[in-house]
Image 1: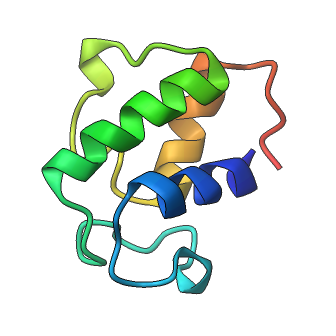
Image 2 (image 1 turned 90 degrees about the vertical axis):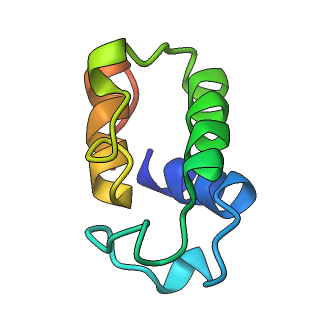
Image 3 (image 1 turned 180 degrees about the horizontal axis):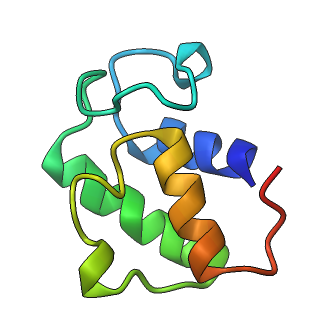
Length: 83
């Protein structure tokens, strides 16, 4: 799953850095993730994993890193492989 998340970030995050160079716990906002791009990212994640982020997860912390996003997706789609 984490590779899927990385690919979605690469496609929709509009980061000025290569996502492959970021650690799982790297701050995506410090790497250039904008508020608008985080919304695009959320929509792409919802489509890919057939989930819907609840309002309680719509915050900066949920989308702060690749690891945080993967954890949120794993919580919402427990049948997906986390690896």
